[in-house]
Image (tube, rainbow, N blue to C red; front, top):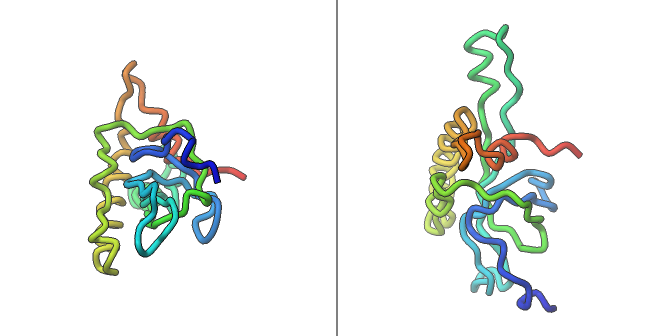
Length: 152
């Protein structure tokens, strides 16, 4: 339809919510966009890296072991059709470097995917524990939003 007339606002770094499939309702970061589709996927889609299981709440009383366990993040990487994602107003800060999260080469092999997930996991866990500050020096709202589970 008239999708091409729309402005291209789904760019790398945008936080989106997946609407369909196994990761429905999960948040993800757009890594790379394919507005015109590709050979294998002849429709507008994008590569996303997301949070399958968000970290849980921690309190002072918890033991160190329990805290580390609850701060774990389970990531996922996936190609998604534009019609199955909803963009949010959030955009991850530039220093997260969304483009480096996962590459097309990695997506071609199961081992590559595992490697990519490990990297995404490490990065997200790091950023969630110490969210990068925004312009006013407060922790970036976008990263905090990504860390929270979507309640619905």
